[in-house]
Length: 300
Ligand code: PMP
Image 1: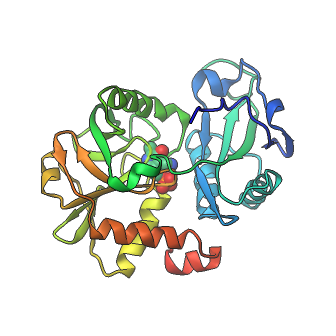
Image 2: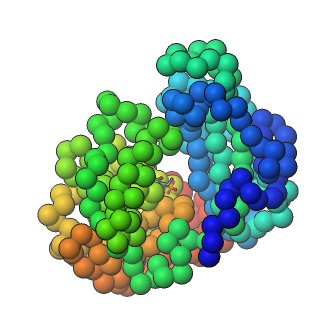
């Protein structure tokens, strides 16, 4: 399917407080957010008209901005309402939702004290990141770029400024014929894929690295809650790359990837198995519940 460029589509985008026609949602080329990557964003999914874990996403957006030293000039309630309003204006019930906040064009230097903060929200149809074939499992190449030490970058912020590592890693993996990359962290421990967290099934228990230099994903935490409901043991611990071959199953968890089985990491092959399948189905069911029921079944 040919990709329709994002600036050649129609619909409504919420922009600084009001809906504007998609093609008119522009910013000046001298915006600080563009030059210095002073922007933070979210990736959310609507299922059956409800945005899954909307409050948690909005709170992370606000927190991501605070970690970059700026405040989004709207309340969490206002942002939640704006996300719902945009989805409805586009007539969508199944969609990806992308809020983004950035520093404006008032000042263009490393210092950005005079910039004002903008917020935009777009929604568009986006089936799973890995497409229909994902049930067979995706193939991950090992990235050479590392997730940085939390004292070298605001690693808990979903800021554009940290995605260069992901794009470089993803491109290298794709060039080598893989679907995505698995990144290690600055210590050489297993970290995450370029847009999703990773889980290993070892001896019937779920193992996943502690999110101390990458995002503690909302999907990750939801899947952990689902796993505990199933009485699966969940173990957060540092994972060394040489332990990976002993995993019985591997899967990714993220808003865009949802729960996606992994069938290869570098030279190691894995077979998607019953625990991944169970959690994949549980997650598919969870996202279709009412927001109240989601919070009851999978508090994070
Ligand atoms: N890590 C990275 C780098 C991501 O981009 C994402 C997607 N936001 C995640 C992890 C998973 O986060 P979530 O489950 O909240 O979407």
